[in-house]
Image (cartoon, rainbow, N blue to C red; front, side, top):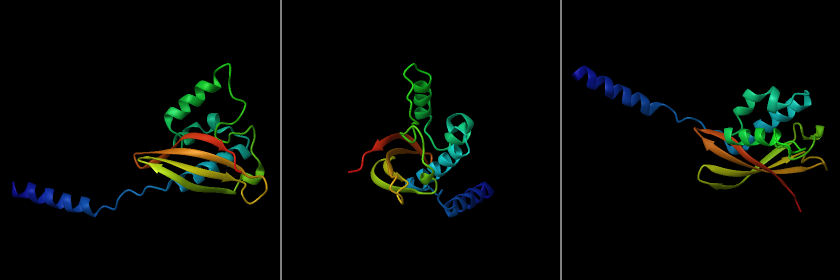
Length: 146
């Protein structure tokens, strides 16, 4: 019995010493997503089809289901959901900025600026949800800057 108690104490102490699981910031998560997404498009790959498994590591399953439903409907959108545009510009690749706007519990809105160093700026408002220490894209809207 003493051996079991000693083992439990040792286990409890070792668990306390474990560093907390590092959670990336929403800004770094969304920059990683758009870096990957745009590089896939530049290679003539369509991430919704050709990079589906990788896409699942960035995008909430609920959003993927909504996008699939829209794509398979008669009123399929003619714009890329994640870009809120029909095409991307080469200037956007490698020119991605992200700024956290507001937070509500496990949700955050981030402004993403593509091509900000050029006069071809494209702004998006992205909502991310934190699930099991990972930020997932839940919605994307185009932002009109004044």
